[in-house]
Image (cartoon, rainbow, N blue to C red; front, side):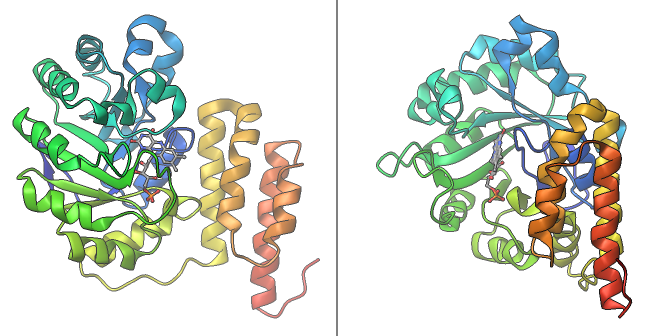
Length: 329
Ligand SMILES: Cc1cc2nc3c(=O)[nH]c(=O)nc-3n(C[C@H](O)[C@H](O)[C@H](O)COP(=O)(O)O)c2cc1C
């Protein structure tokens, strides 16, 4: 799988997810095999005018390279200037043309751009000229069901030298409701010559295989399915490469992955922030397991990271002991 000049080692990418896929999260998913991870979305204006706080989102490490950096904005000059400024921070530039969040669309960015194809053209022309990196766009299928225009946007992107397109086939007005319309990924792939990355509703490795079979997409992008479940990335990589599935993770493996994620978060954001940030992730690691509800209640009360570690240890050790017929209290 190649995007412009960037060779990827497999066809499984981690979705950009603001507020979730920070550096520790991306490192975990990278270790489990994601071939490309992406920064949280970064405001072009913020990067140019606001300075240090926006640049925090660019903090990265060798462990996650190659790295895509995602920008949002709606002014061609700002986006081109921002593209130049981040040239040395990543390996690929992605433009967000799909974010449905009100604050973003009110400023004419994200999925609001789908309503203005001429502006999209100007933006792509300016940014293409400003960066030497592979350039991708990430889109939804349209603003609402009456203005579905992913094919028009796709053609503009191809004409303007974009190297790949990710389509999350829901409209802005759908939010995350209903099902992703994978047939739209198939239509885009059939109409456009550059690589197409499919995004939406991959929760099992077999969903990814089905998406590839049904749509012909060149790669898949996994978002929500990876919450507390980096094994989805590992197993999807294996399945798409025609390799036999691995065993399901043991309790010990789950505990170690969660502890590693926690340690990375402490390194990245310090204990106080990690304590809060990790609550949701740790709950995701135990989702569906016996005792998850009471684990959730106690993790949200844990006063320190050490207490969180102890809760994790106890939770998984108890399950393991139960499996082995031991009695741990
Ligand atoms: C919490 C959250 C944050 C997201 N943030 C971004 C973002 O910053 N940029 C973007 O292009 N897409 C963003 N997305 C959309 C995802 O990248 C992906 O396209 C979408 O979730 C569908 O894939 P999934 O069904 O595998 O989650 C976000 C999704 C979620 C759930």
